[in-house]
Image 1 (cartoon, rainbow, N blue to C red):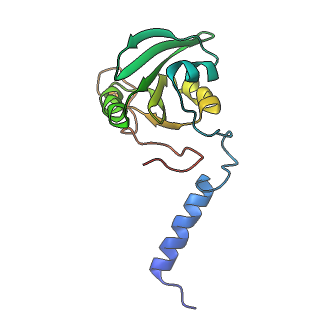
Image 2: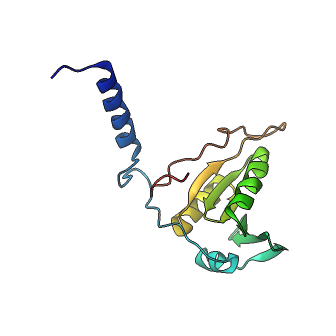
Image 3: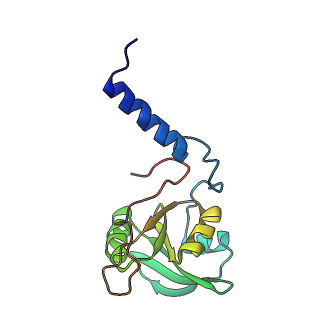
Length: 150
């Protein structure tokens, strides 16, 4: 069989995905549980945090959670669209986002990475456009370890 460029490109792409752990157990990455679902109170209980409610509206519920010295925001949304619109606006300010179905946790990279081992979800990074911002990846999602979200 003759090896052609398209075959080489396909093989190269498969190798990159395999090395990245996509579609595998992701040996180089901490085990990520199935993404949690439920109310803000349920998610907070899973994360072992007592939520300090900041917003309690029909479309969004938002609380501050504290884990030791680390704080993060936990928000739940009435709709997927509401969540995506909120994320699109919030990510302009930078930060790290742990995203699940109709919920988001926002905080320092270390905090949300640690939280991911409990709640699952997909990590996203905002892109700061202000002075003193850390920059970012343009909000690209990273591999979730349990499939890709769309």
